[in-house]
Amino acid sequence: MLLQLTEPSAAHPKSDMLDEIAIGIDLGTTYSLVGYVKNGRPYIIPVEGEETRLPSAVSWRHDMMHVGTVALTHLLDTPQHVFTSVKRLMGKGMEQDVAMRHIPESDKILKLDERSFSPVEISDEILKVLKNKAESHLGQMVEKVVITVPAYFDEIARFATRKAATLAGLEVLRIVNEPTAAVLAYGLDEKPEGFYAVYDLGGGTFDFSVLKLTRGVFQVLGTGGDVALGGDDVDHALANLLIHERQSLFPKESVTAAFYKTVCHQARFMKEQLSLHEQVAIRLEGDEGSSDHTITRDILIRLITPMIERTCSLCADVLSSVDVPSQKLQGIVLVGGSTRLPVIREMLEEHFGCPLFSDVSPDEAVVSGAALQAYALTAGRKDSALLIDVTPLSLGLETMGGIVERIIERNSPIPISKAQVFTTYQ
Image 1 (cartoon, rainbow, N blue to C red):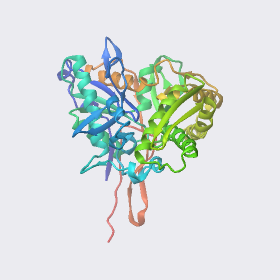
Image 2 (tube, one colour):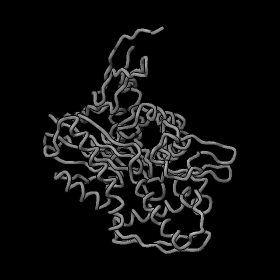
Image 3 (cartoon, rainbow, N blue to C red):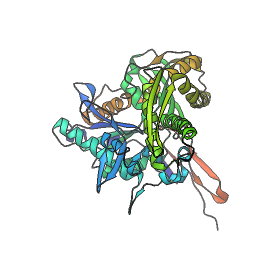
Image 4 (cartoon, rainbow, N blue to C red):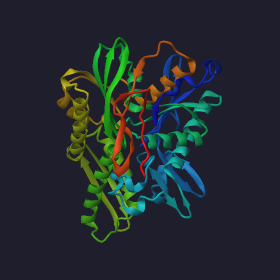
């Protein structure tokens, strides 16, 4: 048996691609972005007016798919027809997603009327919009893309992401881990040699990677994370608090899946505003009437602290696995919209005690790195930073008795190939 992990960098003759523009896409849980390299620098393409972030939301209405902000507006009247956070379901069934278990059962089914939709199909719709926006901006067809995924995505989830891109009419040049893309965007190869880390807390996933910089070469030593931990969990915690307060006013009111989804949308708004203000007030409208709610930053801190402690525990596991104490870190790159919250930065500074890098917008770091990688692959740049990545999970084969024989260990540098002989059993 032969297991092989490679990067398809040599599969495309560069002479055929000199006039082509390849794009980079960050297919996010909450927002998705698209960019390319313009005059040697990454440029993020506006997708809705001047806004560069496309909400990763899709609605089915009047026999048509709607994507982005317009899909979110449908939460007001037909929330049961709006799909959000489908990235958490890529490559797996709904029943496997631990993070979705607290959501009402009727809200877990990607099915409307007589039609059903897979996470791949929903992601395809988001990617089509990003592709069309890029083509309109560039004035030419776009067929090639570098797309990012959480470092802890398994091969099934990565295949599902690639399939969604193919359905959208895009040829995937490379699947890049999100922390790896962020490193490319920050240009850390110009920093002093030593150990660095990437703390990536997005809407639905968390990744932590440790890297070593030596003579301009970055090697990913180890990576870890949780594909069911992110800003969405804060939204649900806030939503549950709001519903609890409301039920004390209207104890007979039933919480439908549609109403819960609307409250989650309001909770996300409050969370984002609390990064700027000490308190935020909203009004909820339901079957029994309206209710006013005020959430302070202190309440948010109380709700978010267990999640941050969980991420710090995962960080410690990764650092321990690669035998790098936190005291040796030269700095930590912050990635993901959730890292905008002041409480998260304060807790990380206290926990690690090293510089936090946030020069590049946490929302745009990943897509900027993807765009740089797309440019390097198509334009044939020789001065691109060399970054050696790893496989985040062990790969093996199930043998007799349900025992898994590991062939490629987690955190093995890629590309890698290993061969092992097995005999059949009768």
